Image (cartoon, rainbow, N blue to C red; front, side, top):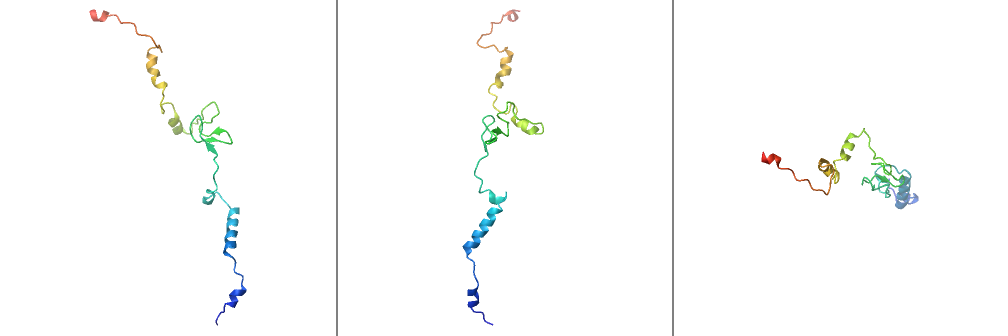
Length: 124
């Protein structure tokens, strides 16, 4: 039995473009949170915080998730002891606190000269 081309001409062959278009529209409806959705994300939710400098300041909430700015107290929880250790005093420059122990010894006096010591110990 030999098949002729006429049997194929009676059938309607769908256009490739219409098939692809249908697939794209179907996939767009079922857009999930997976790999395909990451190309759509172009808006920033967080920006730099002026207090801690991290990119944790939420633009719509106007609150930093790392230090809780603009709250007066720094955000700190005991369930994250490692995070407290990273951010505590002494991990940065300490431009002011570095010199406090030396200034404490002299009672925080500044701009005065020490009185000359007596030579009583040297003469005896």
